[in-house]
Image 1 (cartoon, one colour):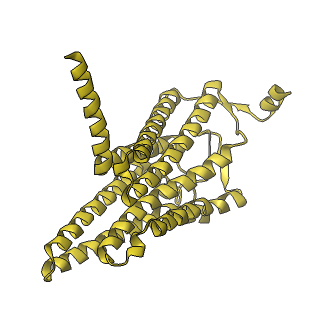
Image 2 (cartoon, one colour):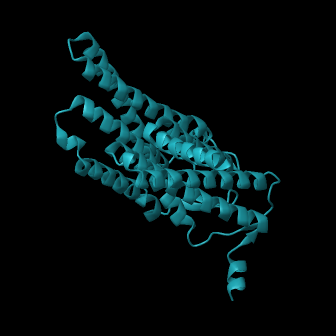
Image 3 (cartoon, helix red, strand yellow):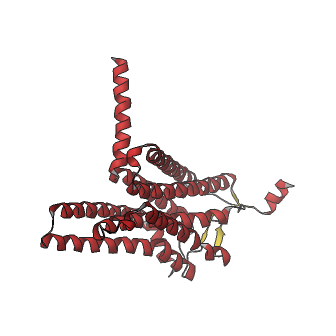
Length: 308
């Protein structure tokens, strides 16, 4: 009975030669994202030097990145399986994966905003300790996760997430519609715009501090936090730049029909951008980098001693 049901709900399709290497590449990228984020999270959990509020925000970004990686991996495996069998088949979790994908990617973008916001608050309001407390910052994290899981709900309620048989994926249809504009606004425009605003406000604040009579320690600290926010801007810029084909496809869909396999092309760049951001997150996070390098050096010294 199960095989008959499967045959009734599936149709045969012709796969292109480039589907297989593209699927394998997406699976590799997704696995690397999952492995890296798990390593980062384990280090933050077990290394006491990483038990700070700033590292809590990094862990938040890693957790969101882990969910993004898992969702893309599951999407890639589903697409790969259907391509190998040369069938078009929507499983029961297809729409759920799309919903969690939209939610987790929005949360990832908001996690970078929270990092920038915290650095902004400790410079502009150094005496308001409530803004620097774990309770307040935990609240901001919870709010962004709520926003992330609430904003895609209308996509599901109005059945705008559909199965695209050519690309073997459930996504919003790329066309000029409220859902596309609303989704882009919630997941991209709001967090990224807020990060840019925070960056330029802090730039202006540092310039004013340089011109006024102020303690050198405050100025040095402000410049250090500005440097860290600049790194966050770089992270977001890389995220957008490498994922530009997806944004381009979305913009083209407002005026014309996108290419037949637009999601396959766009998602390989999207996957690559997520991996790049996770690598940059390690490079820009000094406590995380120091912890990993310390472990590498300890193991290297142990091996050298044992050999001697």
